[in-house]
Image (cartoon, rainbow, N blue to C red; front, side, top):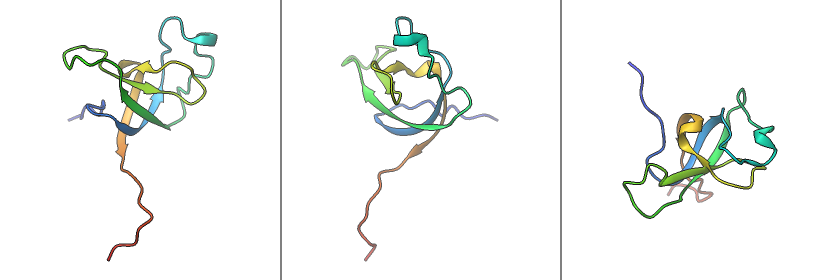
Length: 85
């Protein structure tokens, strides 16, 4: 059984960017098909029914990319430097 790890809320997630969106600068020459990186997922459209509501930033790429253009891994939970009491 496979699990769909596509993000469903903003945050930071492990992912591999495999397909650049049309009109991406340099045609996505920096696509990281083989490298897992942390990507910031943000709200891109206000309408929750918009299939493009969430998009992900790729390091070194100007425009956020559609989530379907990635292979997704788990969420990276926020870091806290406060010691547990």
